[in-house]
Amino acid sequence: MDRIDFRSDTVSWPTPAMREAMAQAKVGDDVYGEDPTVRELEALAAEMTGKEAALFVASGTMGNLVGILAHAGRGDEAIVGQDAHTYLYEAGGMSTLGGIFPRVLATDDMGRMDITAVETAVSPDDAHFPQTRLILVENSYGSKGGYPLPPAYFADIRAVADRHGLAVHMDGARLFNAAVAQQIPAADITQHVDSVTFCLSKGLCAPVGSVLCGSAEFIRNAHRMRKVVGGGMRQAGVMAAAGLISLRQMVDRLADDHQRAQKLALGLAQIPGVLVQPEMVKTNMVFFNLAPDVPILADVITEAMQQRANIWVGPTGWRSFRAVTHYWIGDQEIDLFLDTLRAILAEA
Image (tube, rainbow, N blue to C red; front, top):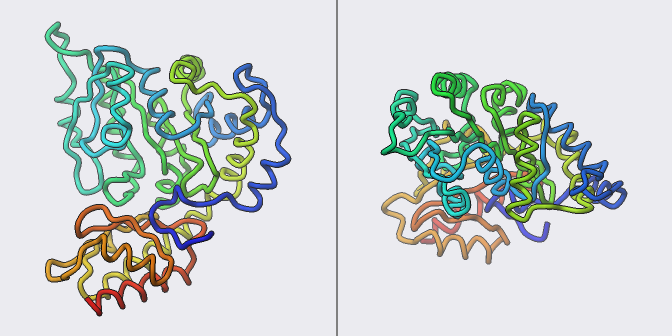
């Protein structure tokens, strides 16, 4: 890469194997369902998540929106965590385009909604209230340090949904990070949800694309919703070819990203003026803060990191940061990050 970029795993460039696969991809018209590489990717994604079918989409946000629109309609209600990506970071799509009302609940340090609160939030069968149709969950949970939530939590969510006839959709943008961190197949997690979207373009390193998975009937409906939001694609096999490399070659190596994130967190904990919780770093995200007595703010540090070592890191507030490891971040880059930040703070 042309910089050392810790801002997100979305910045990762495609691998050489992906570039070669894209150049050689067999293609067809995906709107007609005739692109063989897209069909191969969708079949593999469905198999890995334990679902009947899948749909290739342009982004995780599109996948979540299409999935939500396929489950619920105008005037319906979706239960969702207060800091979930589908609620905070997707431009209000469920409300803007679907007329779907979010019923927002608090989450704990790992990103879990209280199960009793979820059940209590289901609206009664009363004309005064919207009809609850859907529970939205996330794994790993981005706003809470990328924490990998265990299958047991989603089994509890499933039980609530079954008692009330609700669907469950998972934003699994980093689903495979959650699975690898727990040393389990992704399907052990997704067996408890009706649909799941996962991103190919984050830790799995593809240049673009996500996949929405669910039952065959659900995917038929989702295909129509993809068209509604302008997501029909033509010779998309050029992109899907990179996604196949993601699923076949990049999943197991996510453990390397997790180990480097832990190394970064432990190193940060040794720097005076930095506050971090290494025990909460389970996947590839490290959130850390400046101590109250540090006399400079995050934007100053961010600029200094860039100028001194071409290191890019994402501030999340006046005194807080997020650093994300990925395929293009190795041990040498972790060491340089720590040395550079230590020097900046020592001079502050």
